[in-house]
Image 1 (cartoon, rainbow, N blue to C red):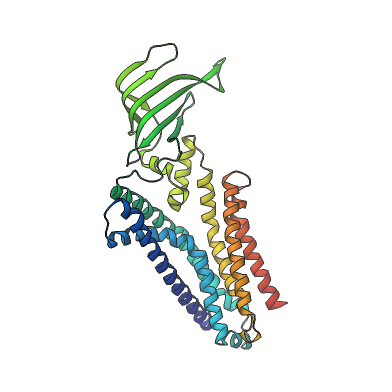
Image 2: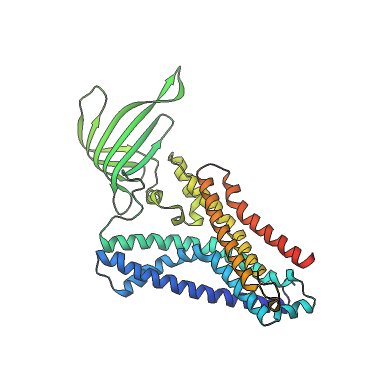
Length: 372
């Protein structure tokens, strides 16, 4: 058996401590965010407290995912400090139970929570956050936040073997598939002896009031087509072929954290086929894969600082050092993720190195304390 009766008891204590920590932190987050929604959204629209609570609840899963490592850390500290204070840990040691055995329940719980956060909480949080942005936009009458990825408007690029089209728009519609005040710059590939080169030449510029992404083409309205050395041509409408997916266009301008785990691989492939940089999304995907290891490392750090006998003193100082180590680990993970997204280092190395280092360091410390 993986767990004996004593380990199940420790596991229940860990679950209770994590649930208590989760409840306290979520209540604090919800309270602060409700006030924030009343201040921000309530400043542009007349909303009730219930509406503000519903908006905050849409953001709650994503906020929970971001704070989960610290929830596990605090839960482990509470569980094992309580067991130590009640002399239950010394009794387990006196009964011949190794520290590896009574630390395993917390590690298993952290691993399960990590898998749940990646496979369930992250997709649900991304979906609800998208609903939050849409609902807030409908209440305030503003465009959906995150559509304009650049200060000077929205930029897209599409292409094939023979041409490339750069698309610029000032704004987008609320559905994310309508571009306003659009300019399309079309470039043709240069051929030498019937062999394609890596060089392109400008072919034409197309300006339109709106561009609507349909199934396989852009529908342009009120068009002005300008070709070098020719007079501008005015058209009421014009169609331009495209391989962009209408269902994915809105997501292009979303932060990586707003794209759920199960959608990320397809979204990355679609983004790269459109000629866009998907580095941030690739790095986010690698970070999600590494997050269960980070959770286990946080759990072991929290438990490790409570293994000292309470009668020897110094437990509070150890807890402070453990909390500091966890905070440093979190910020190092964020820094390495930024380096990986920028291409300064390999993405799997940037994602897995900090949590693996913390995990092996915690295991080494436990082995030193337990086995000498």
